[in-house]
Length: 463
Image (cartoon, rainbow, N blue to C red):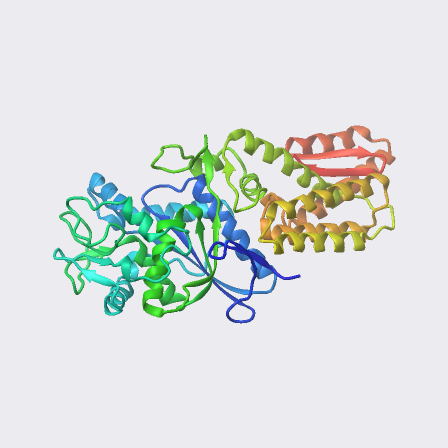
């Protein structure tokens, strides 16, 4: 089996072939840090967390870079409203981002570059673009990219330059040559954060930071460039123009884009005021439920946000949790080692994930495994080895999806204590000391642990 990735550039799934065997260089566009992250951001965070985890599961050495846009008009506006430096706002929001990211169990990227800390590399890249004949300086000290010099304009998005030019116009106060030209370096205005440059005091345009960061940290061509599909145009299209005008090489071999989280047929965004913060949602739903909700659909498709959808996700995920709990407390009676069944489940799982990270398909096989595990336990066919093998595989999958409750993962001491208490209750019942047996059961239930007496012996689970 080979990993297939849907490449936005090719408009098709392609076999993944990294530049260097066994290694993956991946850059994902992060957030503009002027406010708390919302559930729309959570989707890209969890999706590319899953992608990087699966690549590592498949044996790749992954270097993941996610950027912060910490210099931006929105940040400057917020800073002026609060009468503080712009970087004070961005630092505060970056701290909030990491709190929410950690709460979502998103593993940290290898690097989180910031625009404010990449100024020398940004200036150097703008200079290279000018030297390549694709950039020009305006009288106010701004620098623009001349789109008419670019080859292959629109190859990612499908937009055609001549068609876009015919429908565009230059505002009266703009000094760029072409309506589709975009700013590489913005001349400073009063009250704005700025850095010195060869063209005067100013700050980076939006698109240039990613081109400079990729070149600085990962090289001229990377394996995977990711982000939300709302970034295809103009952001990623313009990144390509900038980088390739200088390097004459592809910026990325594979372009991956997740679909938008929608509310009432519109994408979730702060500008539309229809967003729900990650912090508020996690106050009502466990992180494993939020992750399951985001991953139980293909990453490229749209996903509609709503409490009903989260409630449905919680109910579905509970079935997996119940099976996992039952396996951990199962009293083996049979001789079915479940080896062939687990091997088949693993093959199905890898087949789905190798098909463009089809997490929904992979999760469907996890439910199939749970149903078969429950059947084997109900009929008493499952052996201790079989139960252990299924538990190990569920943990293996969870290393990618991270949807088991945190307090249940790796808690071997709790397992040992519960087995001891179950043995004590069994002995008490043999001695007809039912009041003490029931007391243990009732007190455990008060702490959130339920013991069920079945024909196959006592079983326990967290409630």
